[in-house]
Length: 348
Image 1 (spheres, rainbow, N blue to C red):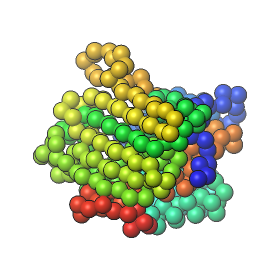
Image 2: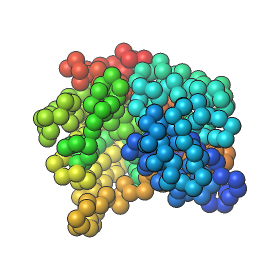
Image 3: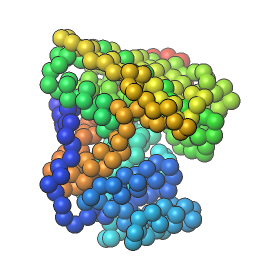
């Protein structure tokens, strides 16, 4: 299978480039948009130029974080002549239309996950990017976490042969109580918890396994937050086209906000790689600190965006992997909703 960019692109940044800053417009002024703006401020070569949000006060507040940045409530200003890159950080139901419009105006696009809520809409985005000849980087930050870059590098160098089995477990205190509201709890806007957050894990595994999921079976659970109107945890069993198998367990609702427990085991024909955040030294502070193995991913992703815009790197999220991971996530959501195994082709 042609994997596009090599999974093990450990050194993603190219510090030799320095020139005119790439001007970024951010659509959306929520928490993830603020994270992108913070990352932009720390990476030379890119800068926040404009913010769009339907709430004027939110747009103005986010734009105020960057000197000279403007704001508007009109999405079309995010692909004006004063902008080079459109960062789509809205709720997922609007991702496809905004991205297609930005590509039609000749802009590069940084697109928050999931890329769309239907595979057909993702296909529209990919086709628009190809027609425009402009780069698309889907914000799958898990790929840019240090531990995953290290594991991908080892896989690319043949440390385990051909990957055949993966176990991935993520527990975090993030969404309960009160961390999620509005669109995150509305399946019509988010795609559902399994689709919305499962796409992170499924994208990571699609990349590391260098293969496409073909069949999934998902089980949602109200394990930690029974009062939340969506399951807080889920498990997914994944079969890949080449016969490899993966199991995924995710919970975003541990009682202590900021708690992180991450485990990954990847076994192949000649070896095994594994990591657990429990093995890392942790600071005991009043405010929980993320493990070093996952810290800095947003900044690394932003450096990579700059390098893509400079033409010295290809987007790490290759189009066929974007489509495959989204299709698997949507199939997993259907499986969770209907309580049955689902062939990924059912949602394509």
